[in-house]
Length: 383
Ligand SMILES: *Cc1c(COP(=O)(O)O)cnc(C)c1O
Image (spheres, rainbow, N blue to C red):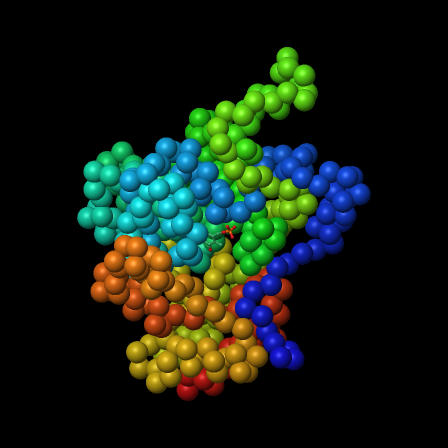
């Protein structure tokens, strides 16, 4: 369609392009100095002494995190149904089982008050997802984890930069936090991800498993007494390393993280103001003083709205406005539904939200004219 307004668009500048070209000309295409620099920059960005480990996707990072924390066959990991399948699939990679918990109807994040009831003797970890870039209520989640001796892995695919109680996500007391740099995310490298942790043992294991289970020491040519061709495989690892081409993008995207966040927040604010009197719920706001990354702007249609959510999206699409649904909750997908005998009644809030949610376009390159167009079409469709 002509003049179609996309739902999301990456924001790649000349700096990113020049850096990629520099890598191409250098002849070093895979993991190298730029990946290392991106890791250092990222660790500095999060602060609080975290180590950052670059990977080729958040999915890889989440898998590495659970593996390093010792998640094993038969273990249980508590997470939300209101997420992308990657959050739960990595639990299955290790032969463990996800135990799904319903969401808070306002934030669409995991409902911390429902977590304790889901704990069994097999429970090993909790994986909160900061949906859309709004921080989960981490204080009760971390308290439950401490009480029951559980690990916490934050799926922060949407949450750069997001704060909780004025601290950046990634600097809280969880075990590992994982970000995504997938093309549509707030910082984009096409495909890519970053794992951060303050636990040196976990970091060491993740670095080894990220690249074929090859012992790190052998790679450290300056301190190792072994010849440079020598390496040792200590585990059946994975191929999860980030390329310097992706890191070239990441280095410059990260520098703009706060500029991007401000642009997204301005878009969210204008939507909030312009859509306030329509029969819909606006997205939940962060706590006073906290930062929302605004990866997604998700409205929920009121029950009084005559058109169905699907018809609403069709009408917006027909007017050239790209929108989406985040997410089709996991209990409605055949694999999760059938493997764990899940039904909508088990997750009343997520099931209800699913019928009413629409993600409106939000991205840094969106102009005010673009946004006015979206607002006018939404208003016309709902009144
Ligand atoms: C995008 C996303 C992932 C996976 O990220 P990749 O980098 O594509 O692997 C995981 N969880 C959530 C919530 C996501 O939105």
